[in-house]
Amino acid sequence: MKVVILAGGFGTRLSEETRLRPKPLVEIGAYPILWHIMKHYNHYGFNEFYIALGYKGEMIKQYFMNYATLQTNMTVDLKAGSVALHHTNLEDWKVHLIDTGINTMTGGRIKRLTPYLKDGTFMVTYGDGVSNINLHDLLAFHKSQRRIGTVSAVRPPARFGSLLIDDSHAVTEFKEKSPANEGWINGGFFVFEPEFLDYLHDDTTVMESDALEKLATDGQLVAYKHDKFWQCMDTLRDMRYLESLWESNKADWKVWAE
Image (cartoon, rainbow, N blue to C red; front, side, top):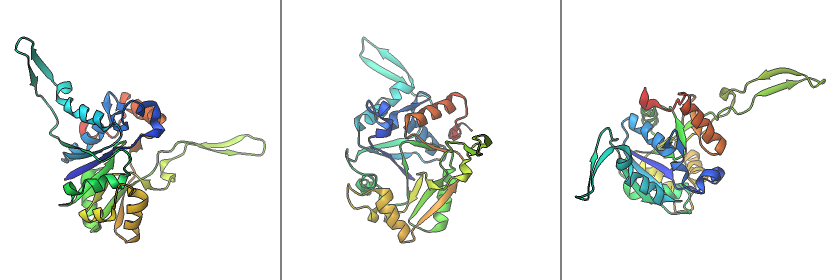
């Protein structure tokens, strides 16, 4: 199963970090969030990745070019000018790094991957969100529905508690807001049939507002509800929250360690 990761956006809402590097390389627990996403897919046996590059895509290429060197021990023979890597426990990943343009929209990035995706069912996700969604269950659901596309529906993390205040300004009730009270939103983690590529036209196609809306109108989009952990990394606050979960061993998305 081929997995597309959209990794070309500018990440403007996280500009504190993305001025220097693309958002998928922003680190959580000393590992890029892109690595966390790929570890998740690999846990379920999906290990062929097509990474749609754009903004600072050369840095993502450099990351993978140097991955083995940085992750393993090595022996450097200075006199002979040779380097031997001690390959131990490296991930069994095949990573295709595809330049899809600096200003290309999300749908356009997938459209540019058409030559690689037209031969079967494929998965798509964003390069800035983590979850503990069961990808086997997601795929089985998609197959059972016999539609062109499946989107994972999640509840946004609760950010604010609610207050009840009487006329004297006294707080009569304080209640922490629960994600269960939130509506369902697009959480990424898509599954598509090749026919979805026909809904994508050019670099200006926005997957969400153009292609998915049309897919829904045609009755070809279904939602897989995931009511457990999900978190995007849109802002500095989100990044710090994910980092705090990792550091406190509460990283629920770390399914590969189960």
